Length: 197
Ligand SMILES: O=c1nc[nH]c2c1ncn2[C@H]1C[C@H](O)[C@@H](COP(=O)(O)OP(=O)(O)OP(=O)(O)O)O1
Ligand SMILES: [Mg+2]
Image 1 (spheres, rainbow, N blue to C red):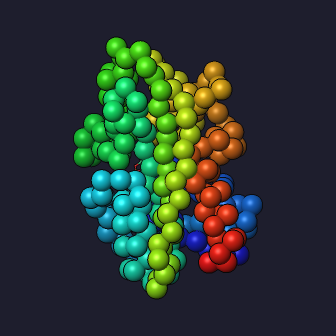
Image 2 (image 1 turned 135 degrees about the horizontal axis):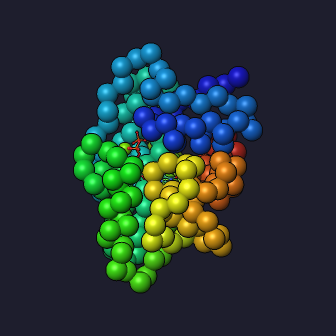
């Protein structure tokens, strides 16, 4: 079986990539499963694209193999697209999903416009080649209270368009059918097939 490195330390992402890649018979490995000590890549970019490329290229150069990275987050219209690229550190540098979503609920408590979307940019870095970037989205709205236990991150406060439940109340399969991550991966797959990368 082929193995693919996902340049992420987020176990929620690793789990979803594992599920999404299973049909290709590709095994996916996150950075924390590697025996090597991999440094944190500082996300200094102003866009999801810049940060995804930074993560993929840094780890690909370090390991000298092809690497896929994911930079993702939540864009809320009433908050001028915040938390955006700061999604992981919205409530502070120490990264805490619960505190982040509580901050969103608080900021949104008096907002009528609930429109929001999840964004996922995938970067494929291959040594000696130009990095490929693909952006996926999932439209929806911000709830007034969190609900559901599945998924990770902001899933309990996000209701996908056309659903009456939160993303965290969907099964892994249901989320993978509509998620921003699946959308980006579909586009990456199309690119790879038509360019035989
Ligand atoms: O499907 C999702 N469902 C809910 N929340 C999500 C999702 N996808 C991203 N998110 C949130 C989590 C985190 O607050 C931020 C990603 O930040 P982001 O820097 O890309 O990832 P991270 O720091 O957790 O791991 P890493 O950089 O090692 O890949 O957006
Ligand atoms: Mg990060």
